[in-house]
Length: 315
Image 1 (cartoon, rainbow, N blue to C red):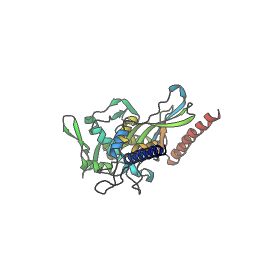
Image 2: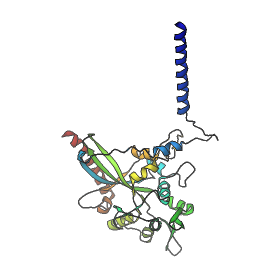
Image 3: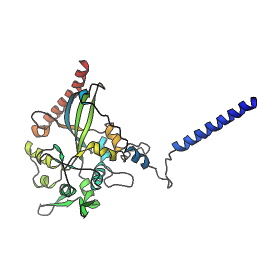
């Protein structure tokens, strides 16, 4: 009897040790690859891109919502990781290059604006690559002060395009901003405020229109120049599967790995208000000429957003 108990104990210990070793083998992820370089687990990211968590809010649970437009400036230290590297490496891409690569590969669809003199997206009007290539160009001034456009997207054959690294590098060196369309809403089921990015657009100020007629201190001219700087829009949810696949470039810590999707989901970026949905249909940059007045209005809107959540909790 004693021998049988010892045998059972030995078998149990053997099975436990085997299972523990097997789990350790499966969980073991090397930090270095076979060449001694830091390894990036791209296989896991590809699988994760197919299983993005999205909260589906019920219409009846949304009791308050407001559309806001924000500008993300990559020159801000908090946003530097969205800008670098200017040219893609084997491991990293900037946010702009990621978007344009997936556009050229026909995984993403770019959408037009409602009109040339505003920044509002028209998600019912997709842009062909041929049309988009005429909008995304590196513009220079020749000796006679005439503008010369160099296309970033070059046609390979039929309707296939590739990205010209030469002109893209010159273009990307001056592409500093992104524009987001966000909705802030209160869900009574979760009893809290949510912010969701609906669309994102690159902003490139150095286009033909802005170089030919630089805006003076007049509201309409400044606003029109900004509108001309927004070539297209993208659905943010359609972009997320590709944001998951790429890590942002580390900033001083090679162990800290964060995907673009994590960066946006955790709102690690800084931004400032361009305006909100209002009955006058006018953005702050179009309404006010004085910078101090614009800052004052930005603070007012931010305070209103905060107070709305507090007021909803009170009642």
